[in-house]
Length: 538
Image (cartoon, rainbow, N blue to C red; front, top):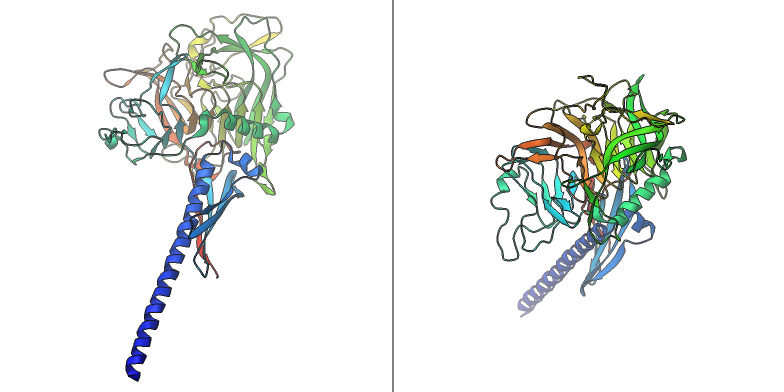
């Protein structure tokens, strides 16, 4: 009997301990799952913020989730800078059970750098109309692409393809792969996507005017006063339409990166007429979403205006958040339009040496090739150790100018001096015309607030080579609508006018090399070695 009692007691204790261990294991698992839920909720909250830095300054970014038998507390905070790129911290504590088990997920995250992000893979064709713009036959796109969900009815594929372009980087789509009825919209085109597609991705907030304004204001306030420009109203001697601008010319002299600044320029604009595709988004109060805008024709400077030459490093500042400071970089802020290019520098191309971001509340017109200085890889992209980078942010549009708009003989106006662009190259031309390079190269991270990156007057612009000139972009693009670069033949899908696209990602942007926070992605991802997961002692 004694032996039987001892054995029975042992069985009971074993069963009890097994039950306790099972309860504890369940509580530990529940606490971990609660912590993960808090982490996911924090990521979702971050994706919903127009400007995450502004939200954190306002004290937002924390919460509690109660699951009944478990709960979590999460908090989003600013962590530090990774170069010039903001680094955030998510700390989520999940608890469950009696005694209480606590698990912590502590992750340093960064806002994902978008390669080519757009709200619509469409181009405006009227004040209230858009048409598909296509990735053409044989085009090679070496940028990650993100396209927001169009929410169209019926539900069609949101990326427009003609022929067989090749996508060499991952593509992120805001929409689902299937229609509400379960049909696979992407089955026939999936082989074109070399690195695959991720569906149902967070919204890129490039159409959010509050987000754009917040970032522009932060740049304005952190730029040195000497490099904040508001050009004078345009000279009324120049016939309407006209506008004012600041002209910037980048070059290297004596191993130092320099920029020539000419303030108070007057731009002679060319009216956009019937058949034009040069649209931008209208102000929020307008009843129509799009409007034709007047493209760049040519410009003058006052004869009394002296150009100023500075070193790029003169413009350097550090972004700050609380007690944290980023690595320094250059900033020029223009309350108006910007022209990049000219004839007064030693090299016909624009050469950027240093780290600098140009911000314009109006348009940025690119009037030449823009290259960064420094070492290159075998594919001619800036190498990983190249410290030079350019950022361009326009509240309006960023466009390559039309070389055909230069006048045969520029009108003369008292007190104004005509400023030629694109003449210092082979074949040499004075007047008529200007000569943009083939290919035209833009090495920059570009953010466009009210339009798309592209080429002005691309439907009729002169093509200097057959079948089309090449526009090479190495950097990144964020745009609310697509900007037209050139035309595709409807049968072959090959470029037939304007420019053919060659867009490549500058992977250095992932390392926080670019001055300031210009990103609009809703995706936040763990920084390298940024994930910690551990159990708190009871």
